[in-house]
Length: 66
Image (cartoon, rainbow, N blue to C red; front, side):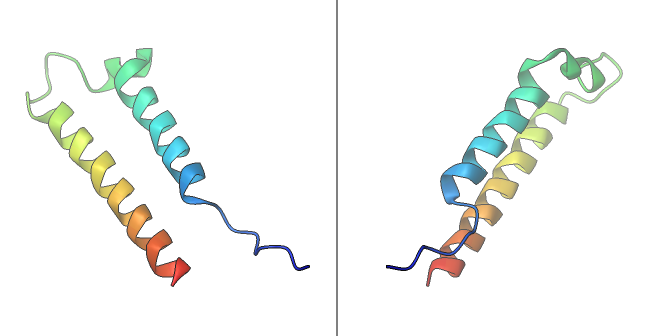
């Protein structure tokens, strides 16, 4: 019986992106981008960036499986 190839699974990537999202939006590091000098679109831009990275990771994992 052969072992599966050693590569990160989609769930590992999703967990890592969740941790990054929590760091950006839920930790005291939020003070770096949530100050009054920033544009009101900043949190939406960060959220969009996180979603685009997640979509790219999912697409990469999907093309690796086939």
